[in-house]
Image (cartoon, rainbow, N blue to C red; front, side, top):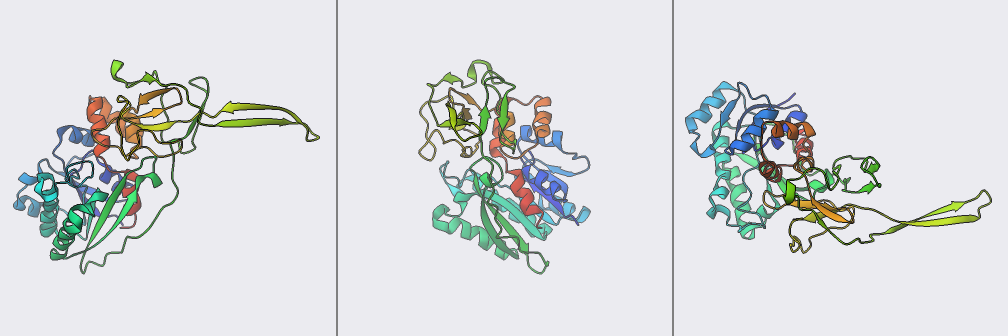
Length: 352
C-alpha cells in the first residue's frame, strides 16, 4: 500500500518521480524557482494538489489546513545544500539556505508524518566538525523522530560520481520499518565503442549515456568543441588462426573510448585534482554551475542537457517536456545539476 507524501524543495521532481515509481502518491509540493516549477508541472499532473512557492511565506495555519484536508505520511525534501557543500563557502546555518532545513522541521512539527525523507551533500556530515549534523539530529529528536542515515554514490546506479547523504526520520510509535543500511555494488560506466560513422556504434548495454556526434546539438560557437591531439588510450590485437592452430595474421587497432571531462570550454580546470577521468570512470558530479563534457579521443564536446537529465536518471520524456515549454539550455543544465538521482530515491522509497 502506497503512502501519501508532500514534496518540499521539489526542484524538477526527482524525489517525486522516485516515490511515484515505488507506488506512493504526491498530495502537494513547494518550489520557489519558477523555471523548475514549470518543468515540474510539465511532467506531473498537479491539478488539485496543494501548491506553494516560497516555503518561508507558508503560514502555520496553511500547513494545518493541509494536514486536515489530506493524509500526509511522508515529507520529502532535498533541502538546499550549497551552505554545506565543499564546493561552496560552507557557511552552514550562517547562510540563509542552511536555515531552510528548519522549514522542514516546522512542517513535521505540525503534520507529524510517519517518515521524513531528506537528502543533502555528504559534506553535511562533517560540516563544522560534526556540530551541524548533531544539531539536525537533535532537532529531529526533539520533534519525536529517530533518525538513520546513509551515504549513497550515484555511480552505483548511473554513470555519475555523486555522493549524497540520505536521512530517514521515523516518528516514534508509528511502527515504521528500518531502511538502512543496504547497498548496491553494480555500476554503469560511460564506456562506448565508436565506429567510423554516425550509424556504426555499439554502446554499453545500459544505454544510459548515448553520446551525440561532436557536430550535433550545442549552442553554435559555444558548444565547447575544440581539437585535441590524438591520444592512444590502448590497443587491441585480433589474431586469425587456421583450423590447425597456425597463426595466419595479426592486426592491432587502437581502442576508442569516451572520457568524462570537467568544463570542456576551459583548458585549465581541476576538480578532485583532475580535469579528465579515465575510460570507464563515471562522470564528475553534476552541479548547477560547472559544464561537463566528453572526450572521444580526438575532440572534446559539452554534454547536452538531455545527457545531463539522463545522468540523474530522468527519462527522456521528462527532458523533452521541459524543452517543449521553452526552457533554455542554461536552465536545463541548472535543473539537472540541482536535482536528486531518481534511481536512489526509488531504491529507498520502495522500502518505506
